[in-house]
Length: 227
Image 1 (cartoon, rainbow, N blue to C red):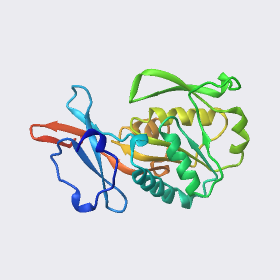
Image 2: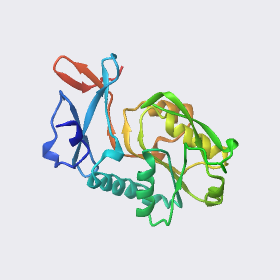
Image 3: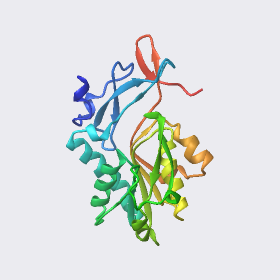
Image 4: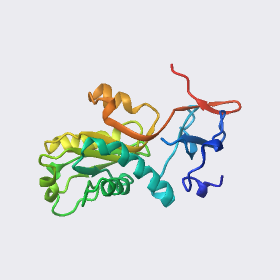
């Protein structure tokens, strides 16, 4: 596949290829169909990850991921969807719409003049490890959280760093989400951050697709074996 062809379409189950994988990982959707994701090496560690950039995905792919995540969250009677910037915002909006909501709450990294520093927390991510921003909650939207069952949504959860910032910000304003949702759970590294360190029940974390940590071998990429 050419680089620009990734994330543009969903493939039937029979298109899945067994390991070793060369340049793409066949991520399985809940209905068995396949989304091919490019494999990116993590420096010179000999490990790699399957990558998803949601705002580059074809509309059909974005629709499928939003439909699947909304279906998983629907039984939880969510009242408000909160989205993490940047790539989690479009997914959060789409999921909120599918849940029948009239709006959603976007968190922001651009400080508007009416924002307050005391309603912000530091934010970093695996894709921008050398950049630390601040994550803001618009004070005008605080009343929407009162008494609400909240879902916090990001596009990809990998190490859990970004979603932790969202949890910190919600805690700062006195709330805790009922559920955490994402298009992709990338490896299981998030479990240490969210479940072990923060005490989040893993059953509250909902991902449409899950991808493993990959290990480079002489003939291609394979799932890394547990240590």
